[in-house]
Length: 81
Image 1 (cartoon, rainbow, N blue to C red):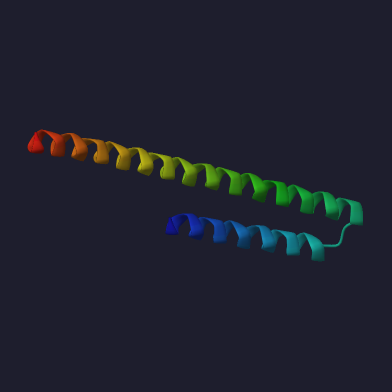
Image 2: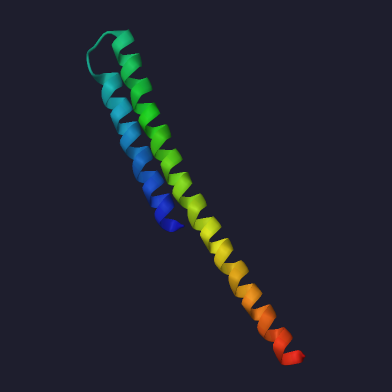
C-alpha cells in the first residue's frame, strides 16, 4: 500500500510541475488552458489506473483471507468431529 502512496505522490508532483511550467510559459490563454486541462486529464487517468491496481490488490487479499478462513474452518470441523 505504501508503493501506491509513493506512485500517487510522484504523479502529483509531475502534474503540478507540468501545470506550473505551462502557466509560466508564454502562450495564449486558450492554449494554456487546453494544455492544463490535458495535463489534469492525464493525471486523472493515472490516478484511476493506480486506484484500479489498489482495488485489485484489496480484492485479491480479501479472497485469500476468505480461502484461508474456509480452510481453517474445515480443518477445525474435522478435528472436533
